[in-house]
Image (cartoon, rainbow, N blue to C red; front, side, top):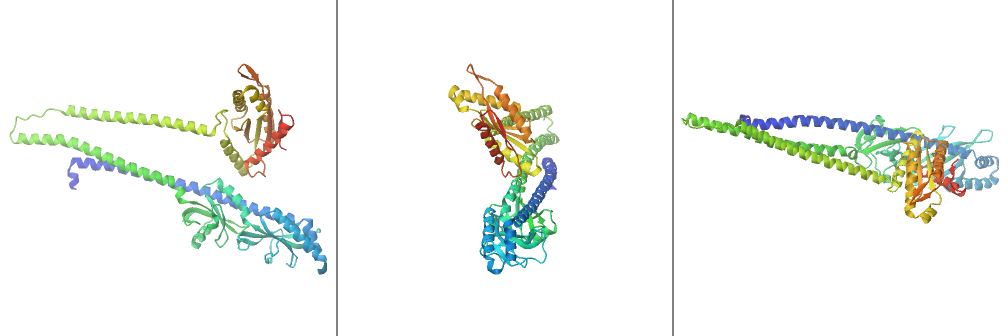
Length: 541
């Protein structure tokens, strides 16, 4: 209470409290809302990631079973099993020689298959693609249309995670005459998981039902360790609900699990907490530093204000004491107006300085933003033509392919090449060639829609990406652009220059693993157009 006996101390304490209470209150509320929003967004991302992985696993398993079913219906397998069941033991050598050879040939052409074995109805082995096949015991009841007979697990023989599938072998009259068993390498699923995880900041890990890591999208997934059994139990009890736990690298992560029932796998989608809250932590530290600096500044100003009030009071008290002692000759000049004017002048000067500094800061910030925008534009733009460059084209194609694989939204690609461009350079000079490239690029920009993308592919080659466009519509646009270029005339140094285009057209397909598979088809069509005499459009069937 002694501190409150001074007017100067009261002003100082009040100024500090008036600064800290609202600042900290609003800051804590803002941080809490920000953390809640981050957690909700990451939870949604992880649920989507786990759901996509689960769906891809089901599709992958279905595709493997369909492939085995097609193999079991081949003439080689059916005839081999039929001969084995009909021939005597003295004449089975023909089957034992031909059928294993066929199985080995199939296994070599399909790398995910580690082992193919054909069993008789009594579970006796008829033929196998390996010299020492796994010892297999068929379950008493397994799906007649085929399915998993050995759940995914770490396989010491093949030093990888495997799953064993089986489908029935049917005779021509649709009787079960045997079983085709395949040991499949689960690593074949990794590219699909990497593609799914590539579009998300999270990671995926596949576990067997005992919690052992089988496969993951981490760079060194072979070194993943098991998470705590109790943690795994809690995650499985709250399937689809994110939790904080120590992940497979023993780092704090935020993740959830989904169960893939057909493969009996646990799908873990996780993301390191340090990555999630990195920006939030940095912002918090900056905020605390600002609060500390602001509090120190306010305390200093309050101390000076208190001193400016107390000093005149002390002078008045001294003068009053002298008058009380009988010194009536003392006179205090009236300086209130002068003091207030001086204080106002100081305040105005301080405000002017602050305003001037703020204007300088705003001007510098605006110039920096414009410079960054210019640099951003230059980083994705070809300097000669003004179109997108190759780096930006890669991003556009990857985005369009991901959109197509996710939503089946078709897109098409035009690959355009200026005919006899080398002859143009030789006849008119490289400056004329650059001029023609720029004018042709401008024609492209004026001919496409606002949602389309035009990029310089290299040299005199250009690529136009047409989202939401079928193959026939893309062919029509290619023909319009070709005709427009053919009829155009470019004046350079008093000479009129005309050029023609050869165009290759291709669209997105289910079999495309990469965006440049589409570009490759368009390139093939471009060369067909050139071989056919140039100034033509060729379209991939």
